[in-house]
Length: 293
Ligand code: HEC
Image (cartoon, rainbow, N blue to C red; front, side):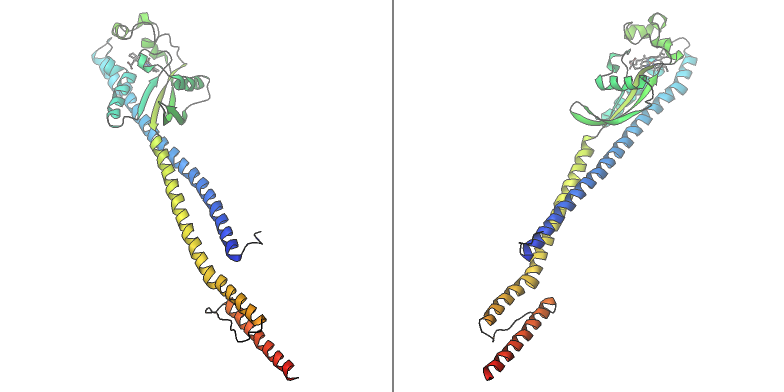
């Protein structure tokens, strides 16, 4: 390969190929690693948000609601008895500081229309209903932005039907607030919705891209310096001495035996120069002998 190129161009061509190949490999490898980092980071954030919301729900179910029911038998206090209402309320305070962190209790047949599942949530809930899927996680687009989402199914139990069963049997205050059209008729054992959290992934993805760009620039600058240094070394220690050899050898071949091969280094070039000089001396001697005859 590159047989018709000069030594200098050949070495430069090889170095450029090494640069391109190693850059491609490094960028692809870097992207895979950074992408995994982004996924891990987003997953961690989403899992923590979801765990906090679940903890709030559990607190309500295990501590607050039983206590309220004890004090106010037969009454329904929305703020302290609905884990959904309460956890959404908590998430609103989280959003005051982190507006892009979204928590949603989505259902296709909700009491509160704000909890109505959108197209994406609908498809995830359907995959939960079909069975087999215990958790959904991954990147998704929402309002033109990329989010990392984690979702868990919500399965109705018999006790849920006190409020989500027959609207005629539910608390009057609940009926007054949500009406009797939507959010009822659920069946125990079936998937009725999903807990969804969304954490912003745009920033992490942009940062990963920026890191790759900086790496590419740094790597290219480094290679450019290598290229220039190698070129200087090649010119000084190989190309210039060879050009000098060519000129001197040309002169000697034309009879100018006073010309000298000069090299400043003490390497292979010096060995060639010494060999040429010995040849020149032998040639001069041979010519002298011929002249004497
Ligand atoms: C004491 C009444 C009550 C009980 C019991 C109850 N819920 Fe609810 N649930 C509500 C209310 C009220 C809302 C609406 C909250 C809001 O405004 O966001 C709600 C909302 C929901 C939502 C969000 C969709 C919607 O309807 O707005 C889901 C999902 C849900 N509940 C699931 C359950 C499950 C599962 C159970 C049983 C483990 C259960 N609920 C038991 C009162 C109840």
